[in-house]
Length: 307
Image (cartoon, rainbow, N blue to C red):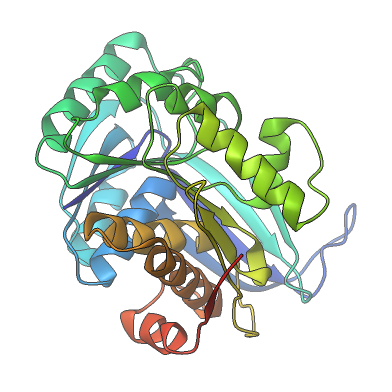
């Protein structure tokens, strides 16, 4: 089973426009409302690939039932720690060039009592999970070093995946992580420098390995992804496909990688699965995640090469 831990659920309002004209009136072409958050999206992706998923973390009293309904519809079981207030709302504007502009809400403040309750939930649920995924942001009032506490709470028998950046990533790496999945922008921002070429990219990945990661899966967007464990490194180019939305592509990548990691698959398969799911997600119109049929179609057309 893959357990995902969501500390920052969100209502995502995705709005498609011909163009985003700042300071002017914009006409909406289409609008999609989804109830997710990175870790919840991962759980849904795992379930759509036919594997067992479970999710936990924080939820909010006023509109949390909409998330329960969405997870029930996908067949993903859950147990949440409930907090006062409403789930935050994020707005994603996509223009006719597939350029994504995001406006993210900060959400409600969360106290120490609730975050301690989440740690207890993680200790209990990860004991029966092959993989535990820590993914996404943290609510107001919670220090970024809390990611280290989450990583420490994961049962030692459960493999750990972290999809976070900056100090959240570093604090988790201090506890040892089986796979970390930044994208290129996140890696640059986390390390505080520009990554100029492929050699520099691998050097940056090795820095994360030195800090406590066993594997680094680096997303390169439409260029595909790289994976390395410090001994072997592989690259998988994405397919040239029509991009309907990049929302949730990284979460799809983590979902597929988590399944392969739990199966004990080699680096090449983890990478190929991640790129297949990420690509399938951007091809999917108006949906929270990819379909297994689209994933299989992409998988069959991908090629992995050693770096």
